[in-house]
Each structure stands twice: as C-alpha cells, then as structure tokens.
Length: 545
Image 1 (cartoon, one colour):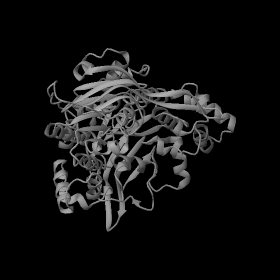
Image 2 (cartoon, helix red, strand yellow; image 1 turned 120 degrees about the horizontal axis):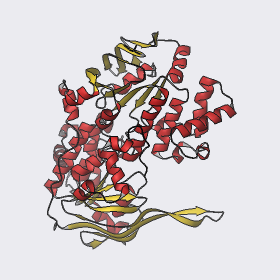
Image 3 (tube, one colour; image 1 turned 180 degrees about the vertical axis):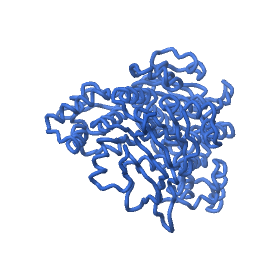
Image 4 (tube, rainbow, N blue to C red; image 1 turned 90 degrees about the horizontal axis):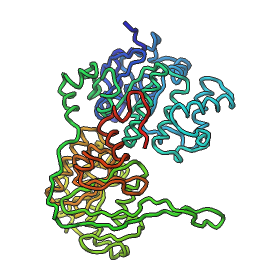
C-alpha cells in the first residue's frame, strides 16, 4: 500500500473575533498519496480554504490559532515548525494556486520578476538561468510566444493567462504536492477546460499529488480520485469519487449534488409585447497612437448586433471574456455611447440626452456581477434600496418607503428586519438578493442581469435562479441575462445570442442553440459547459477556440 505523502490529523482552526472565537475548522483528518487527486468540496464558509492555508501555515498569526492538530509531510511536522523549515516546504515541496490571480499576483511587477522571485529564493539561480527556466515554465503552461509576456504586468493579461502564470509560479520548483484553490471559478468555460486539462497533464508528467478545492461538482467528477465533503468546518463524508456521486451517504452531500441550477423557462407567448429592441448596434472604442493621439483603428466591442426582448422573456447572452456581453448590456441601457437604433417600449432612446432619459431609467435597471463591490459599504440595506426611490421621487413618505422596502425584501427572500444592517453582515447570496431588491423596488420593465450568479456557490446559484424566474413570472419582466455559465443560461433563457469578439456567432431559440448548435465556436462552448471530458479530452489537447 502506498504510504501517504501528507497526513492531516485532528486539525482545528479558531479565529479571534469580537467577543470570542469563531471555530472555522473542527477536528479535520485526512491524507493524500503520491500522484493522487483529492477534491475538497463544500459551500463558502465550510472551511475548505482555511484547511488548505493551514497546511502551509499561511494563516495570520495575529488572528488565527490551532487548538489541535498535526500536519505531517513525509513524516516531518509542519504545525508550529520554524520559519526555515516552512520556507523550504513552501514552494519546494508544497505549492499553492490561489483562487483569484488578479489579487494574488503583484500588480507592480512584471511576469518575469514574479516567477523569477520564486526561483531565486528556492533555487539560487542567476538572472540568465532564471530567464531560461521562466520561458520553459511559460511554455509548459501553454502561453504561446512567452518572450513577449516576460515584461507584461498582470493587468495586461487575460484571466486565463493570469491563471497560467500563477500555475507556472507554483510549478517552478516541481513540488510534490500542488494545492489548487478554486483555480477555475472566475474563468470562462473554455478556458476552464484548458486549465483543468493542463493540471491533469502536468500532474501526469511530474507525478504530483493534487489537492483541488472547488464548489464545482462537474470539475470534481472529472478530476478527482477521492472527495472530501466539508460543511461548518467539519468533514461530513469522504470516499472515492464514484461512491460520492452514485452513493452519497450524508444529507449535506445529497444536498450539494441536487443543488445545480435547474428548471426551465416559463415559455411565455411568442407574441408578448416587445420591451427592448436594438438594430445594428455598434460600440467601437478608438485606438489612438502617435504624438497627436490620432485614431488609427477601433476595438469593435459590439459590432452590428440586432436583438429583441419581449415581456416575460429572457434573452441569454453568452461568450468568453472580451466577447462584448457586458458592453452590449450597458449600451442598451444607454450607460455608454453607441451607434444604431435602440427602442424601449416603442420609444426611440438612442438619441436622448441625460435629462430626457432619466424618467425612463426607473424602468430600465441592472444587477451587477459582484454585489460586494456594487453595494456601498457605508450605507445600510434600507438606504441602498431607498436611493433609487429618492432619485425618481417614488415611494411616498419615509414611512411608506420603509414599508415598501420591507415588502421588497420579503419578495426576494430576506427578513425586513435586515434593512438596518450593512452589506458586510451578509453572505454572498444574501448580498445578491439585496442587489436584486434594489432593482425590483423601482418596478422595472427591463432588467440587465450581468453575471448575477458567477460568484456564488452552486446551491446559492440555484436559489437565485429560482428567485429570478419567480420575479419574472410575477411581474412579467424582460431580462437580458449575461453569463458564461451555460447551465444557468439554459435554466432561464428563452432565446440565446452567442458572441465572439463583438460579433454574433449564432442567435435563436434556446433549445435550438443548446441542442443543435451550428457553429464550431458554439459547439466548443457547449462541450466545455456540459461535457467536461469531451472538452478537455483524455489527456489530449485543450479546447481550441
């Protein structure tokens, strides 16, 4: 029997909070063998990432403590080890890919410096040796023409490229254990497939053990040998992947497996009233060059797009990052300049100025992707929801407005007593409900939903999808639903527009797009979303888009 390379025994983690302690991890025990992939799954707050950070002793000493536990790497105790021991283990033996590369990478340093720092600390390579190794690593993780990326800053790279740089840094010293904390959560489905395929190939080449932390069960099914399920800081089930998916034992595991967004659109009548239309819509951003900053070309973010959204209908807009999805939504709401005809409820709005347009804005609303950044941290929930009412002179007296806010909070599944609390006091799903309430209190006719579920756990995603569907049926709302999560789009959309580089690749009824896609690009998107194995291949090449 293979001897475990890493053993976690009775690990507990407490955080000091005002008035006492928070028990984040409670008596967790597990092990991982060489070359094995262990997935740790659970919702936000379950203790997944805290457990992973504890392995490398990366939790802040000022607020975190370990009441119990042992972390053995090849028999060597890491819990409470001295700094020299930990520094050798970090990077050399055990590396970590963090969840959000844009925050994990230093924005002030170029790619060469960031990967080179790992090599200089652990390998004592000189500048020339480090550059050679960096180029090898960038090629290994699938970045073409790596010489051109050496002097790039993180903001100059796409999401997939940033994640690949993070992987290159983690692999620089060929570790025996790689911890990947939600490595694909923020990525488009096709890039996700490429990153997962890359991890599998690298694991095979280097013989690494992989600890994969994720809430995406499709990724778990495809990648993991064993699964460990956590909730409330405890392990409630661990077993072989097939057993977890086919014979789950714990009620929480069954809840996770049943939580994927489901259901179908209500299929409102095809002749419902038209709410929003666009014809040959264009949003071009100028590219300027030279001393006099003359326009030499344009970025065609939205290029000749026509669409129609009817009462009670949802038009889903899908495509990779940079395809023009969000730009299209902002243009329809007249939040950015555009060319082409736009009509809202039969009225041309493409030529209207701010003052004339303002009365219509109450009926045209947007829900943003990240509620934590779109809600003011300095305002209470009541103030956030009330703000739109005050701007548009709606809601009556203060008491009448508070009563309306209370009813709206109940409608989105929140207690009215929550209105005097602040955004940081809520979970991600609750904050998104607040963002939806802020929109719904104005009784809009047309709502742009910009990735409203992408930052949420799968069970919370299902709840928000059900809520949006219920609100739409109750108020006959017209939705433009922007997402790269095709499973969520399928649960909501009546029609789908597939975008790539600002152009429509395919457009039509949702069933037609999902069941019989016509273009290679759409087929690749569908494969990446619904058939992960086909998208990544059996150790073969990544999806080519």
